[in-house]
Image (cartoon, rainbow, N blue to C red; front, side, top):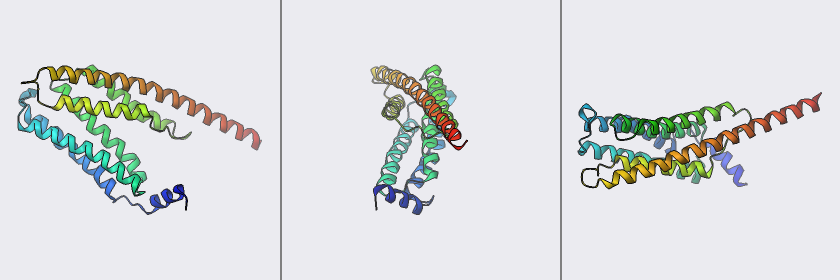
Length: 213
């Protein structure tokens, strides 16, 4: 049996209720707790950097770890499912999106940075669905780098070190600006790839139609 056959067989046996998908569901379930922890720490939307803020940091860290863990398990045990392909990126965007919006509501992150990232993320997701009839846009190295840098920037912003290490806010801002730049750059790459994929798909359909005629 080839590796491709093994993967296909694994997909055939894997149901929705497998460990990677359960971890993805846990990550989605952690999002409202994460948001509530940030709200509990910030009466009147003014952060107190107390225990609830640390609880939010812990919830975010656990959620991010489940993201890596479910992917590793799914690939190593051939448990990749259609549900996982859809739910996993949704879980990621819910987590990062809620973190960005909450940081902006708390006045810690400029709204323009949040809007740039969110528009790019959901726009590319919509673009993937739009061109799926022509093929799948694979995740690029730049896209993976974008995810890592975004996660690092959010984590630095969440850490309540501002009271005794003000310089950390500048580090967090610098990493976030790098995340915004990479987000925009990879967004352009995906748009170009989508246009190429669409043109290639339409050309293939035209050629097929001419051959049948």
